[in-house]
Amino acid sequence: MIFATRVRNRGRFFVFASEIDMAKARAIVKRRKAVRNIRKITKTMQMIATARFQRSLKRATGTKPYTQKVRELVRELAGSVGNVEHPLLRRPTDDTRTRKVALLVITSNRGLAGAYNGSVLRTAAAFIRQQEAAGNKIELYITGRKGASFFQYQKRPIVQRVEVSDEPRFAQVEPLANRFMDEFIDGKVDSVHVAYMNFVSASTQKPEVMTLLPLAGVEGETKKETQRKGYYAIYEFSPDPKALLDELLPLTVRSALFQAYLDATTSEHVARMVAMKSATDNADKMVKSLTMQYNRARQSQITTELSEIMGGVEAMKG
Image (cartoon, rainbow, N blue to C red; front, side, top):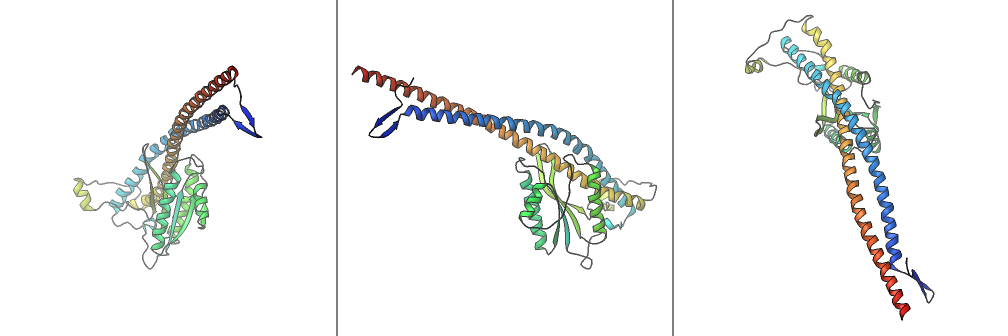
């Protein structure tokens, strides 16, 4: 019990320290409760991101060997044919160059994913500056609300906003790949690039710009390269290699673009999982710190109340 909380002296009120300590303690309790509520939210989001990451990881790692094997098969076919001529392998010359470059930027629809979106957008912005310095015009294709907001703020025109679900499906990506191939074959763009977060492992994700068209690394090994390996494989093809290339080269483009979406989605879930774990750990530390502050404020309040009571008792004796 507080002996006296206020003393009126010449029309003024003086507030004793006990009330100040009590108000401080109440403020700390409210803040601690708010931090605990935030911790519940971040912990839940961490668990959801972890579950989504496990599903996405299985898809990304399951399709990557297929994507790599298709490209390897195309290399072997191209090596057996020799000088391969295909529209998807066309490299524009000065006479056929349009000075237009298509860039697809893959970002997320939601935030709270740490530096995920920022890293991808910085990489894309650096690539755009590089291409514009070389005299090329960028045609932007955007996936994700974060990327759309970023480029709209910069007042850059967007050719198309590509809508893809949280778990990308091949049927959603295939029309975009077909559009890129048609525009490249028709000579409307000189090249097609994809800015995304490449998933290397659960601990390593790298923002990069991948060249989708013209196809790179599928021209076939030279005779010196095969001799250096110590073997030379001879294949029999049915149908002929050129007919197979007409089927496999578009498949290589589609599978590479689909793999980029899978890697980006998996990297997003990893980034959100790590960010929410860090937020949960910080909330735990803040709760402990606020608890210590509350205990000190409460102890100070009790000490002040005892001092006031003792002072009142001494005053009554006098």
